[in-house]
Image (cartoon, rainbow, N blue to C red; front, side, top):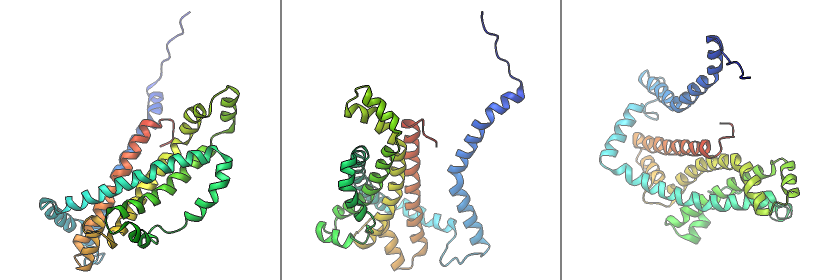
Length: 271
């Protein structure tokens, strides 16, 4: 016997569609929230609620940014910073994920190496920059290293935590089913750790831009951080804010890209 078709009233359909509609609205609001901040800033400047000497209006900053864009000056600095962040990010993220997986899966390795990483992690990465400059010089190599160090620890701890939070019953089932260590890693540990890995990737992306800005203050001849520092030295406040806004936008777009990848590869995680 065929089941009777289910019919819903208009009110029931509206209730079913409401969560999806709210989700679209919230996601759209998250994309445009930075624009709301810029609008409040512009109005505060126009009505003299803030000191324009230190906080120029976004319209004035935009004018400066436009002049720098058409002269291609801005692209040189953005390109240099993106290259340093991209290389340093990969150098830190890949080993951080691999070692984090190993520590999460192996209690003996975690007990052996965990205290070492715990002792090294609190050291401020910028504090060791002078030492890195001595070893690797003032070129790009030192920038790659200091970014990689900062990214490495974030990825290690987030990955290790994701593996350790995997319900033990899943591991036991795999062991009883005769799964190899690689199969357990590929089928259980790695998928379980993916939400934490992407959280670490997003945190590491933000930290990378913070670190590179400080590193370019001290030892660079181009890059957004160098540009901000040079503008501060000449009290070119609008140009300085261009650099600040640019590095903020770069970080924001990077995190948006990582969130898109997370929705693609980790559809079961909460977003």
